[in-house]
Image (tube, rainbow, N blue to C red; front, side, top):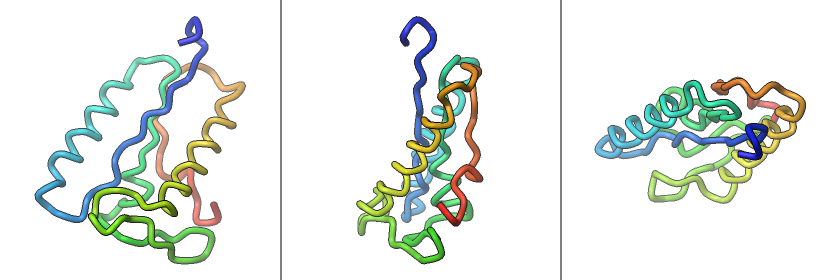
Length: 115
């Protein structure tokens, strides 16, 4: 990673609609978080905490309005959800310039209701 100066952003999965899929998403998210521990330049972006902090939802409150952010399959983010996630990651990348290379676990509070 650029002689130790590069940065990587790993995204957790928003929780799925179907309970049968919840176990897989939970294990994947835990694995992402554990894999990042101790790795310089790695930031985990907790999309599960951003989009589904209290469980599955099709909508997300963003910039004062309710936005449908999920595809009809109940798993994937739709275009609007991807755009919100992209804005969050872009904001984190901008903030990371000049930040130290220490490992950071990014809490959901990074993306506020005001965007």
